[in-house]
Amino acid sequence: MKKQTVVIISGIFLITLFIVIAQVFVRRQSDVSLPQTKTQELLPPTEGTSVVFPTKGKEVGETTVIIDFGNGTRWTGKASGATVYEATIQFIRAKGATFEEKEYKFGKMIEKIGNLGNSKDSYWSFFVNNKAGRVAADKTAVYPNDTIEWRYVKQ
Figure 1: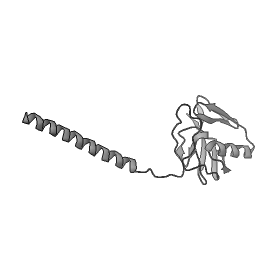
Figure 2: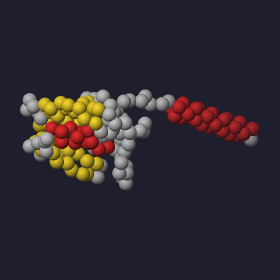
Figure 3: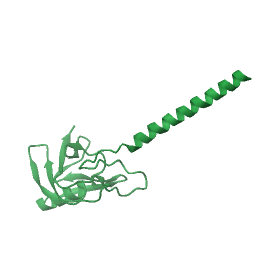
Figure 4: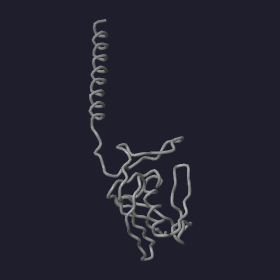
């Protein structure tokens, strides 16, 4: 009986010790804050979510917009908007150009600028501060002095 009691008490002690160590580790992980970046890298919204905004509030200011047609033609200028989509549309309209957009479950994307549109061999892709967009253009926040670049990619 004594031996069984010692084994049971030792087992309970080890389990309790493991739980305490795990709690300390989890608390330390939750206290670590992620570094704030100027451009929010937003995760795709969950089903039923219609709008994703930056956590530190909507800032609207001038961003640089570059549209690279992939044939040597590049448009560069300034525009303002809270998202990649807003700033891009403002810039395209100021240039007097046409565009086409498409609404998906995950948000809006630009499908055509001027006479170049998405196809099985080519597509428009955007980058913010040289980082590829991970979600729809209307879900990606931009801040003053960011650089938005649209590239016409040929496969």
